[in-house]
Length: 243
Image (cartoon, rainbow, N blue to C red; front, top):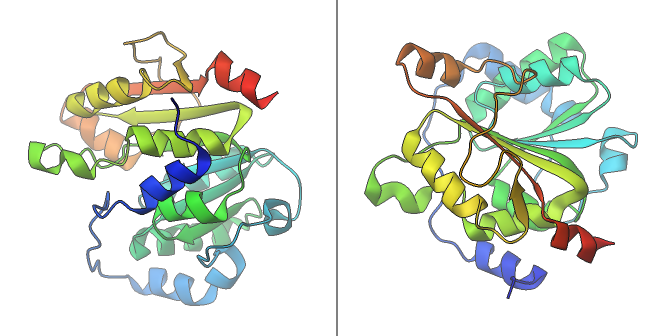
């Protein structure tokens, strides 16, 4: 029996093990300046109150959730290439957010906003259900050591939370260069009742041509790591329940 809305949110919120470790990364002067001067324009303060995304972006448009922004290059590249979409970037690391803000201001972008907080809390409390057309998780921390597997963001409960926020034709895109994480993704997502692997169960998808080449991907290619992309949509049963 699938978890209901309240059960999923309570289960996720009760997790004590975070999928990240906050490290005191040194801010460059440019990143610090951006955090101080541009946050008021692009930043959304975390609060356990549901956002009105149409008011946040000033329009009605397809909404994209970008989970984990690195140094912001990929988020900015996509926001530039697709002005028809609105991008909500979520991360916990200030240097990367500062870099994203600096780039957003330089490009004078109007279709990107950022939240500096745990994505689980953002999904649980700030995002309304059925609001996301696309969800991106590009090269999440693989936590490769067995004792750290419990820190992996992708879990059955987390996917249940994501599916609550997906629009009827929504898609989840995941990319990784870690074989063990690829296996974990397929174990969790391929067997989740609310999702369908669009490449077929047990298969990775072709690399989307529109996905920018990330810093982590470049490093993985240099190390000759295999790259795997995964694309998931809502199952027919879930879509029927929504109608």
